[in-house]
Length: 602
Image (cartoon, rainbow, N blue to C red; front, top):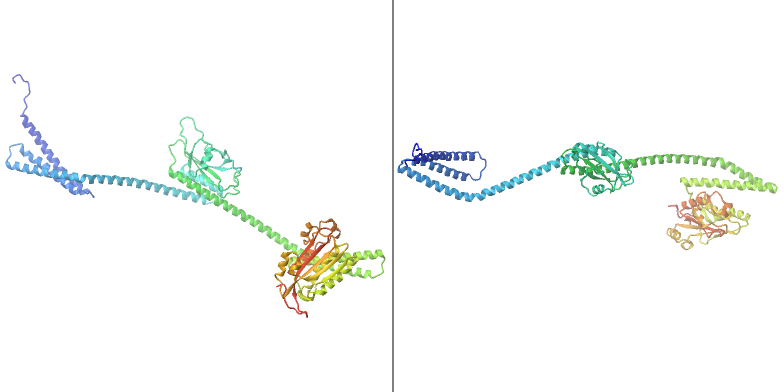
């Protein structure tokens, strides 16, 4: 120890340690007493905390610990027994409170963990709700854009304006670098560029419709991304640093587009599609978002609907214009028809008043001239004049009757008449002509044929004279026979005619059947359907010698129709004669000629 160079301390080592412990206990006690104050402040300011009593327990534990360290300051010097007892009580209380706190922590830690779990769950729910709210806001924004675009698109029903408005509004809403519409060409083999927003690609450009990218767009009803350098986009990459733009394409159904002539577009069916191409600005990091693609898809559908409505409107307008043209044409035709009717009536009036008078004079004078002494040549000429006059007078009468039948002004004159006398008068008129041609003629009246009948005597006689006159005119040699009887089902060859007439027979009326047979030139089968056509003549060369005006049978058919009957002609062929038959409805009279049926036409 004598050779040691150690520096002696200024005070003993145990006193230094005691001093440090003394200072440390003081600051520990100070910290312990400050922490409960902070906890009390936290509990007071906290609106909700589920474990307030735990904080109180912590506070008591800390206060006791602080008190223990504070009392321990008096133990560094000589102290009394009272200080030792207080120190022991403080440490014992601290031990009890600390043990209770430890046990309580074991109990509440799972609850605290569950609170943390619920907090995480609520946090996740809040984030999910935020995402849903974002989606709802995006949908609302998309819906607002769609409503705005739809309003702009449907503000007009002109198809070209619809398409141009669609491109402009989409370009403004989505801030597009380009928006273009490709329509199918007339031949259906190509797509033709019809509308563009900024004309980066020339209008009228054509791409084949069978390209893979076109088929890909046609096969999907969603907006799909396509290469920026494909034929539909036609963006050529630049040299150097260049960020290619994102391009999407979507099909636009062309619904109900007929005669949609724009750049020679064809008549399209419901399965035809156009393609709308949308391009974002280049040299930007912008990408297509889901809500933007949804907006494009909705707008494409709205454009299809608007085009359909516009096409229907155009078709209705074309139909209206066509209807107006037809109405104008019909009105013009009606005026022309009225003018023609007036002209015909004037012509008939002239014929009735101006032509009949000289014709009757010519016929009368020719008849008187035939009663004088004439040389054979003169007599032949006068007979020719008389015959021509009679033919012309008959033609005038036929034309007048036909015109009255056509305009509906001819009415039947119903009266009681002697039915047998009509056939006698017809025989007296026809026999001289038949005798000149050396034809035999016979008239047969059935035993059950009534003596009197009720009907139009004049029209019935005119019909019999026309039919019999035709038989005489077209017969060179042979005979003519006229048969009259009451029509019965077994007397009609045609079952349809038999059922038609027998089904309506009654005790108040009957059907008169008149049949005229001749051995004349006959009629070919192809001419039979045209016999009752006005001004129609037989195509058979044999009959050309006997051609008349072509009005007789046409007038007879009208008369027979007015008398609720039917007329027809049968022939086995050329030079085999023919049979003309007609059936008319007449009223029945008693034996004294009194009328039993007042109106046959009822």
